[in-house]
Length: 165
Image 1 (tube, rainbow, N blue to C red):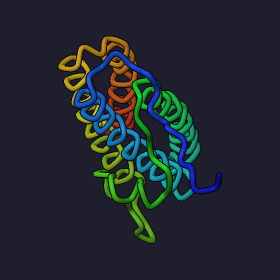
Image 2: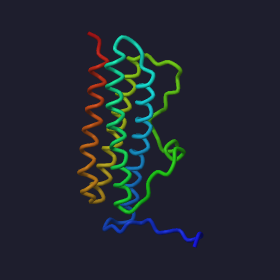
Image 3: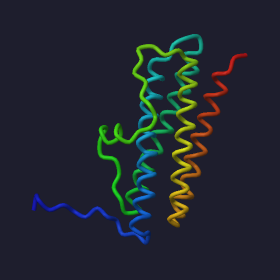
């Protein structure tokens, strides 16, 4: 009994190659979502300067929003008949958003880096949309629009907060 591996392939009407293509795109965006979540929390914990309170609260709100999307992404992968990320190592192997382990990052640099990373996530979500549309996966194609809009809004807020003047 312990040697038996259950079949985790949820029944779907999508072709196997389409499932793989959409799941790969979703899992890439999930890995980057987790990387961006942790970086946003890192900067939330370590922000310093005259706008500390505003930035601290902004980054906490953004981190919560990013984390809130991760479950929906992973569950979408499962709904279409594939499997999703299993560990921190899996995330590290797949993420394209770079970690920032520097001891000190200025607040302006934090905001700029997070803005750019959110725009990278937008690109990931656009790749998900393209894969979903190619596969005829209208549910994934539709739901990813909201995730894209949220990432674009975060990038906009970060851009505006980092402007001088």
